[in-house]
Every structure is written in C-alpha cells, then in structure tokens.
Image 1 (cartoon, rainbow, N blue to C red):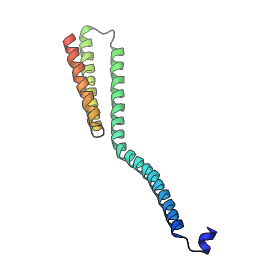
Image 2 (cartoon, rainbow, N blue to C red):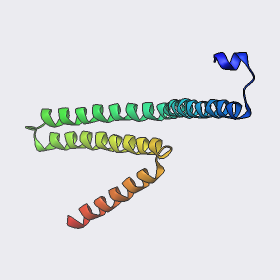
Image 3 (cartoon, one colour):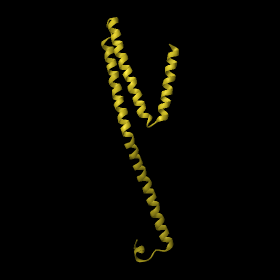
Image 4 (cartoon, rainbow, N blue to C red):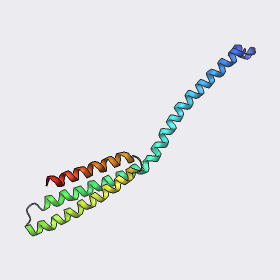
Length: 132
C-alpha cells in the first residue's frame, strides 16, 4: 500500500489489483446471494408449511377422538356399537377430507411428488378392493 500511495501503479499492477477486487467481489456476491436466496425460499414456503402443519394437528386430534371412541365402546351392545361405528366413520371421513386439503397445499410446492403419492394411493386402494 505504501508503494501505491507514493507512485503511480504500472499497467500490470493496476490490472492485477482490479482483477483481485473483481474476484473478491464475485465471491462475496455469490455467498451473500446464496444466503439471500435461501432466506427468500424459506419465506415463500412458510405459509404452506404452516397450513400443512395445522392440518397435521387436526388429523392427530381426529385420530385421538377415534381411539377414545373405540376404547369407550369395546363392551357395548350391538345396537350401540352401530352408533359408535357411525361416529368413527364420520371422523375418518373428516380425516380423509383434511388429508386431501393438505395434499392440495403441498401440490403448490412439490406437484410431482403429490401426483406420485395419489397414484400410489389409487393402486393401493384398488389392490385392497381386489383382495377383499
């Protein structure tokens, strides 16, 4: 630095100094840009993740209700068991609707994976019906 302040830089020294500054600037821009892109991606996904998380909590609550009904009605009369079965059927139907809504939320982020999952579910359901 002392030499640069006392005399004029040669052409080679000037090119080297500019090249080093350019290289450091590009490296810094790359790393800061990478961090910025990661932060922006997280901010874009947060609303979908919150929605899917709420649906997950809803599914857990529904499963808890089903297990409670099953535990309470193990020794009921056949007529009362039909009522309990209707309650379980309604709760499971609600769970399926919630799961479908959650899949639609994820379709915005990973559509290929959601389509693959739905295809697998259809195949599994068809196989289950055939085996009955």
